[in-house]
Amino acid sequence: MATIDDQDDGKEVDRSPFDRTYRGLLRGLYEGRYVPGQRLVAPDLMQTFEVGRGTIREVLNRLASSGVITLAPHRGAEVRRLSRREVTQLLDIVEMLLGLAARGAALSIDEGGNRARLLADHERLSEQVSLDHFASFIDAREAYYRTMVQLSGNEELQRLFPSAQVHIMRLQLRPFNRAGDSAELSDYNEMTQAILSGNAEQAEAAGRRHVRLTIERINDLPDRAFAASQP
Amino acid sequence: MATIDDQDDGKEVDRSPFDRTYRGLLRGLYEGRYVPGQRLVAPDLMQTFEVGRGTIREVLNRLASSGVITLAPHRGAEVRRLSRREVTQLLDIVEMLLGLAARGAALSIDEGGNRARLLADHERLSEQVSLDHFASFIDAREAYYRTMVQLSGNEELQRLFPSAQVHIMRLQLRPFNRAGDSAELSDYNEMTQAILSGNAEQAEAAGRRHVRLTIERINDLPDRAFAASQP
DNA sequence: CATGCCAACTTGTAGGACGATTTTCGAGTA
DNA sequence: TACTCGAAAATCGTCCTACAAGTTGGCATG
Image (cartoon, rainbow over all chains, first blue to last red):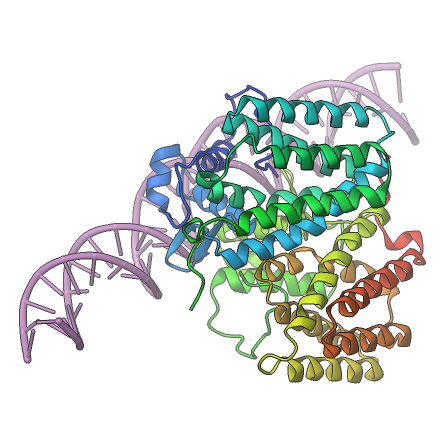
């Protein structure tokens, strides 16, 4: 399954209608063309992406089952809105998953080019932070996480992690977040060091701490960054 | 989204084609009519469930994105086979998730009828174990887990847990598992007690321990219970 | 201004069509 | 007999049309 995390390869051509639409929609979500709460109407999408309704339906189904959008019977799709509580709950899970990923990555850091790969991604992340270019920073962070998960060797994690919709959160918080947050960068330094040391316990702790710090930062955001909680 | 966990309500009638097919397929997987590795070809399914191909496709997409089946381009769907390694990796994740669920359940055990609900499900589980009726046992266990996750109040967990395909594992291990495993029951006793006590730490530990014990039991299974590992 | 009904729009699903790709199977060859 | 190659058959990906069922917004009525 294609995921948000898949690289673009530069080859923009020759993709299947499904793929074009899936990625296009995801990219749109990513870049803010589709905002939380917005309805995604099939006929519009058909025109936009020049594909049939069947294809649109499949794409929406995929996005829905990874939690990026919600589908209600006979009422169509809309970009999922997360309340403060939901974001917290989501991150509680991500804390676990990232801890697991970091642990696994530490255990396999000496295999193949793993060490080099992680270093390269961390390097890139650091550069992006200093450049203060939000989109690139997001990309670099995405790549860094993906590498961690891949190094862990846990294929189930690879399936679940994107679907855990870290992206949604990221998207939703975009207007309130800043690249170049040096506090955040030190998280990554710590986490990377822990993994490189090969110490599983320490790596897991670092991964979790990173997410907990993220939760704290998010808790400081104003209410308007979230969907209203349910009555 | 309808999941395996949804109760049947007895109302077999008046379900949408999608729902009929989705549940029918799931039930078939559950009951062993579809076994790991088996191909699921659209035309057959169309006949079996008397629905259009579009509907079949949507159902297969759903099942695929929760990891129950795999889809390969132009080659259709097949019931997913898990290698020993994959099962272990999956359970590593489930360990985290169940720990989280148990923790959350403990924290909210005094709200509403939560305590009564958990007790009722635990009671039912105990009965089924003594009855030694596999299918009922599975159902009871499913209900117990579902309740735990619901009590935790973490909606993301509710979305993820079924999709974490505990079911696949269960299905795959069916021929080798026995209901009435008293060791397993004592796990549940311990876990239930911990949650009822309202002690979050203790509950989380109990939930995790339960999964770790499950991993051990599974490690003892013969190779033929698993798909061959990749070359 | 509240209420209820209708028209317009969307979604859910079926069925047909057609190129693209994979699988099957049989003929020919070593 | 075993193996290779290619064509036929099966299946998939996608589009289009059609229609019933459900939702929504607005207009008429009280």
